[in-house]
Length: 193
Length: 167
Figure 1 (cartoon, rainbow over the protein chains, first blue to last red):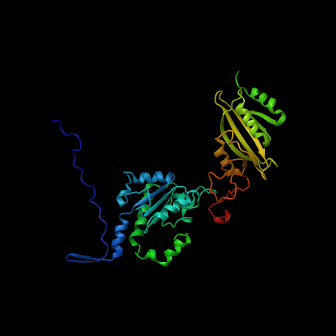
Figure 2: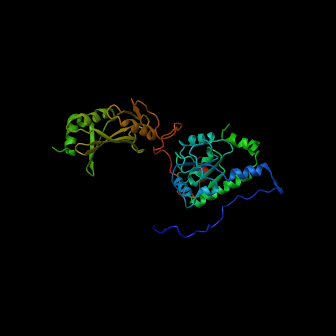
Figure 3: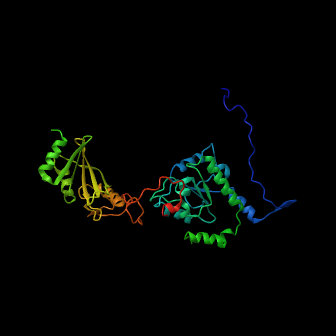
């Protein structure tokens, strides 16, 4: 019998499993009453499924964000889907040429409501240094954007910060927002629906 | 018998006389030009003539010289003889108001996409091309972006003010 020579030190957990905070409500013996909005917001914000649309260096930075060091899965974004099928967060990372614009829009259209968009990095937000005839000067010309992440390219921390801001938006969004006049007018301005 | 630039020049002059001009050697690369009407004859001769044998079209591209009145657009062919490892550069010039050049797709199949690119960026109309449409830019574009017709942006710009870009 050889003695076990590795993994013999017990490592204590640095932190216990993190739990989402309980929404405001009334609780008593065996019941808890709260608004549907806050429950659904809680569920949505802690299980965002990103659809990475990565075209350049910001995409590489996002890959680092997905890796073990930064671990975007901690935020419930474990399941990155490379199809619009079940995803609700479109992350556009990198230069979007005018020729790629219709593709971004098509991907956005194929996502089901509710959907959010985050523009990562200078190129997706504004065209960045590529002030040329062939580059779309910001994806907000094609799809509505919720959060812009600055940087060229942004560090993984910045991408995580953008994701947490999206989580704030998602958690506080009213269930009726997407039926409202303002939202319809916004989509109309992009020629959607 | 090695394929020297001198030999190529003699062969071309024997065949085309004074229709091929401006023989230059830059860094050992022979470069010459002719009228745009005989470009296919020249390319065909360079390819088919057994002692020349330029059987590979390395590159085909355009250049815009706005100051050359009547000869603004150049179409440049780079040919390569793979057997002897010799390269040659051949230029034809055309007027920017009527940039018609005969297509080389019949001689080199590789010219197809290269000519589409040259049309895309310089607007050279390749007569006889099987599918002359934009290859890199969006189809809606109604100008040829690599022509030197557009002013450079203000170098003292401190922000991206849309008014300064016409956006």
